[in-house]
Amino acid sequence: MFARLTNLRFWLLVFPIGWLVMVFVSIAVWPSPGAASPDELASEVTTALRAHDFHRLEPLLAVGGEEVAKTTADQFQTAQVERGVYRDGAVVVEYTHDGIRAEFRLPVEMQDGRYVVNPVVTPRG
Image (tube, rainbow, N blue to C red):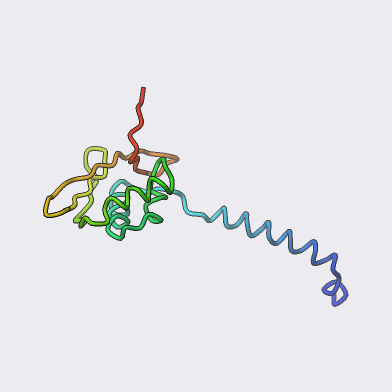
C-alpha cells in the first residue's frame, strides 16, 4: 500500500479522475434557474431589486444574462422598491422614485418546469 501511495503514476491517474468526479457532482447539484412558483419568483425578484443585486436577479431571467440583469438592477439604484407580486401573468414590482409611485411589469414564462421573468420584450408569432 505504501508503495502505491508513493508512486507518481498512481497520483497522475487519481487526480484527473477525482477532478472529473468533482465537476460532475458540481453540475448535478447546481440549482436550476428560476423559481418553483410565480409567487416565489415575485419574492426573489423583489429581494434582488431591493438589494440592487444583479447576481441574484440573473438566474431568474429567461433571456439576457448578466448584462440585462445589471441594467435592470441599475434602474432601481435610486428607487425604493416597496413590494412585488404576481398578477395577471407578470411580476409587478411597485416602487417609488423621486416621490412618484410606479410599477414595473416583468412577464413570467415557464422554462423547464421553472418560472422565470423576461425583461426583454420578444415578439411571438
